[in-house]
Length: 418
Image (tube, rainbow, N blue to C red):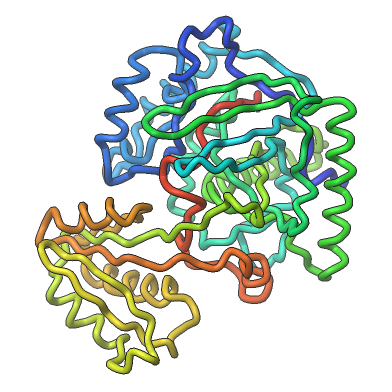
């Protein structure tokens, strides 16, 4: 199979403002956010209220049906809604283009990115394969089936994948907006800030492609197994696209699928070195746990000498404290704690674990019951991120978050995949 461009233009579908009365109701936040805060998604439903919205084209994880993971009838409803929106011609199409985006964040800063498609032949979530596009956190394969159930029959792809480049000079994602056509300007719901998008096509796309080629050549000159792009957010969605692509190839041996849309996945590419690019910690929340038993048990990986320890604050019901994890067990606090929690939960089957993005949200949730405990984790150093992944491999799952929950990518653009 030919080695195609790792990141390239595509036929962009954007909700048509002339056919959608309330464009602000269209974009909803990534489905893996607010999983323990169903009130957020109730607010989303109240706002969209049968208006045209990407809410009807995705499946929020907070709405998965317990052990069943997802409802097949909901999956069919999502696929039907996609086809209905296509039949109603609700999208405006821009052929062979990128979209340059600027996102105003909660603190007023602006985060920029460019939306294109990546070649799944050059991506893998297996860290041993040293792919040019790599997962940066552990992929939990059990999380793929519900996403796959939607994607394998979906006529459209939407994305919340945020991919990172290692462009310290900030040359790659750099555009003169005065030379571009603005195609949307939308206030995002429930405190999500604002997002604007500009079309990048023709000569502007070619200039970007030349910068992209220079960036890739530079990264390849640094290593025999270069990390060109790192998956910052949405790894399980990208892994799902990869699974669907591999399945398609397996079912069609010998067929030329090089131009098949399933070979690619839509992502937003951002620069890890942009000042507004903030890495936030992802905290751990345990429910239905015997807190005293856990705190007594976790002592086996703790030390009394604080100089030899990683301090981790915890909140449990109406009490709080600090544990001191033994530094000899690892260089990442998240890895030490998550390895312990996985082992503990495996021995205590009724415990639920969730991953919470905000300090206040974690503390509020942990204090709701004497059988809850929350651990507040520190952020990682983004300046060493690419080097760490190249040398050490993937990070533990849910080690970091690119910004606050409301600052995640919202579903806005779409791409036909059938």
